[in-house]
Length: 75
Image 1: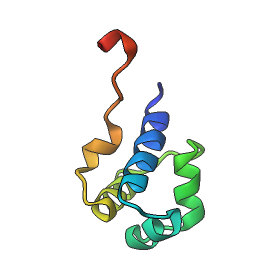
Image 2: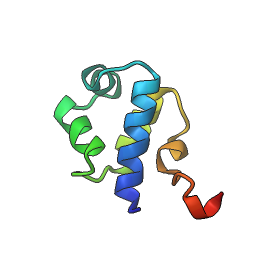
Image 3: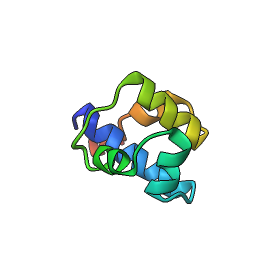
């Protein structure tokens, strides 16, 4: 899984866990909703600054957005 896909998966997972819409997350992170949508679909890569904005808005450590999920071979 490419790192862009990891970010997309984790961003959506943490956003949903926080009960936020893309629009609300974008507002809290000072980003455009379409940008958040594109990140979640893996269409854009994010700068370190944008990852930090998103992590602050989600109240998580920025590194959590880049942690690869365990694979079947890791179990």
